[in-house]
Length: 181
Image (cartoon, rainbow, N blue to C red; front, side, top):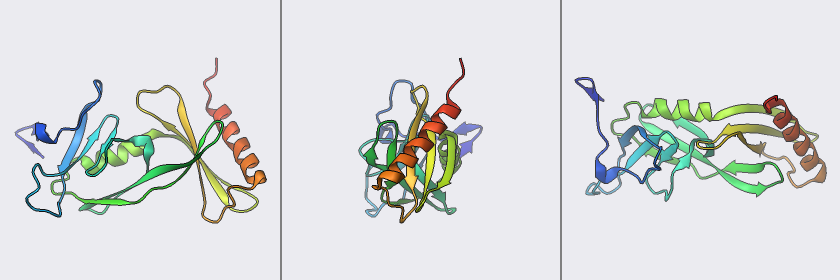
């Protein structure tokens, strides 16, 4: 919230250990199970990602599969790496975490915008059995795209023909998005 044109400052005691070029975009205190928690837990959006209470490190924008805002509650679904293949990672949904934001301000808008902006390429493909989403995402501080796939539920992800088809789809996406000389 702005008062006389100024944005609320994040208290120093709540400030996460930011990288040198990282800056705070928005933040909010969250409802805590213990009312005497000092300092109050906060969710902090930065230029590089999202700092969440209970997480040891920042979630990069490219590491968030889904973010949902109910008007009071922010729900974050992080991506977890199930397997690393030659030129991409196979991702699955991590455990959903929810935060009741006390004064959300610009935080939900920043989260939505930053997660969306991290996606440079996405396409969904039907396979012989099941389907796969191929995604190329921007990673703060890195050139190029980070490539990953997420299989639809029920897709036989270990079958050689599924792996081969996925390799071809990722290769085609990488070629389509490669800068021309």
